[in-house]
Image 1 (cartoon, helix red, strand yellow):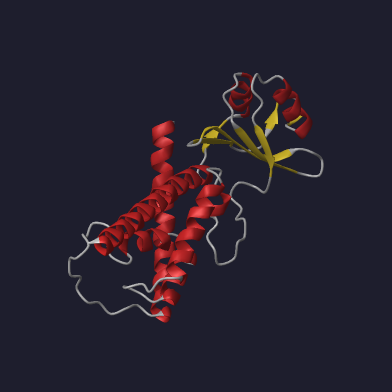
Image 2 (image 1 turned 135 degrees about the vertical axis):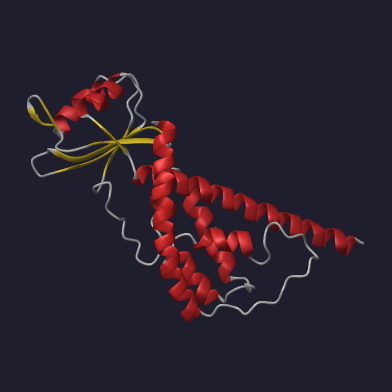
Length: 232
């Protein structure tokens, strides 16, 4: 009886952990996608938002002369905007000095981040960028790493570890498939017999990961458009 209770507690803990990781990563994906697809705004709209204290974070990139070449800002975790076209005002190029002057007049100064242009990859090699570059917080990257370690330390049912490695990395969103399907689908109760299936090997997993990467781009575009419609 005691061993049954322990086994049930372990199963419940595993289910809750999978669900928590899945929800955390879903939030991270949505936030990261919103960052990748900011809506177009004018420089005047940006400066008005700064003066009104509506801006939470500013990401920018400059040339050697100090003129901004990229300007992206957020007004909430899902509301991201960018200045479209040349970043200039009536007096000429919008420079770092002008940006700092505007920030000094802000009632609530936002977080200021100087980085690469907004469409540039952070270059993590095989590993996806979105869990680690997300402004949602370090915990999104930590959730991805925990899921990745869980995959490496387990014996997956549907595919071997090499196949899941490619789906996690090249496939971009393979982590969601793993958390939903392994070791048994989330919607299947413990004790239900699962139909035997041939495990996907590493070579096939590599091929599937390329297809999944294409699907992930379409998913990102769809999420970005939905977020843009929702937040305006």
